Length: 512
Ligand SMILES: [Zn+2]
Image (cartoon, rainbow, N blue to C red):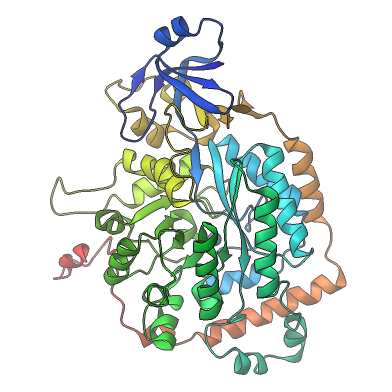
């Protein structure tokens, strides 16, 4: 038995703060919760960790990521619009999947994330089964809980639309680089997902489906995945409506928004989570609420890739289950979940002419990052709150340091966390009853050795073949940019956000 002691404890988003509180942990599970004085009298032989200077909260959850240890920026891609930036990410030199994912897990754990969702986009550098296995092994070795969703795509490889004529318009050197077959067939995909489930599924690792996006999968593939997910009781994680071009493609090629299309194809349901949904319409939001599908919000990623601001306040008010994720594109490029919570909080404090209109609160963001994320990722009642019977995932933060030299004690500790907290305040992290971070140091894997190997692999000179690839991707990017010229004029879209509207008669647009 372990007693995790704290000066202040916030067991859940809707729970009051407990001063001088503690959680009792036996094996993998939380067995008791209350004041430290009561619990230490009840369990005199228990080992005590933590103490007065600490804030105790449930483990944070990252609802969307790709296991990137070195960020895309670190590897050479400067952020730009998704459809342009994506070709810069194809120029990366391959890294060991195990090392890259291990380093990602280290960063997440050290910012208080105990569970992450990993949507694995195949790099093509290794056989698919090896990439998936290495990634899962990395989380297991780091001691982190994961929902692992192998990615699959089988449509629109280069642009949204007629890929045959686009491909034939490309110069031969670009065509030559793009002619490699996809790393995984759809038949092989279903077999692999089933095999991964049989091999790895357990409390520390759930397996789900990861169709990469509705514009990148045929309707047939989406429907097959939808049916398999329902049969097997497995979650589905899909990017959707991340960019305005995806919305325009839906409206012009499919005759409806991608969310309406997925709904009408019978794909949307409570087991499905949509990453982003930046460009959802009000009708889309109602369909999401009706279907029970979840949405994960990645505010920094959407800012960095110039996607926009997802209308998540409207979604939450309509009853959509919304969570929060990093997408490997956090505001400070370091996968700090606490900073991401802060970005979410600030971004959705919408301007208003009424002085006390509804707006995002710190507790709302805390709920998204704990209980909502647990629910939409399929961990339900297992995690997301400190509560007897739930799995023991929790974080002690150095609250004294966060408040130094003084913060008025009238503030809610979650407000203090969002205003003043950063990942570096994380002191101790427990996952499944096991202490994996102590004194801000990761205990499970050799983070420095991994970082050294990654730096070495990333800094080696490019081979001649890699130089040819870089040249082809640069050329391809220009062709893609030209392909989409004029698209924004195809559809009239009105934004939800008009942060600084003109004063001459457009102030009503604040309330779109
Ligand atoms: Zn993503």
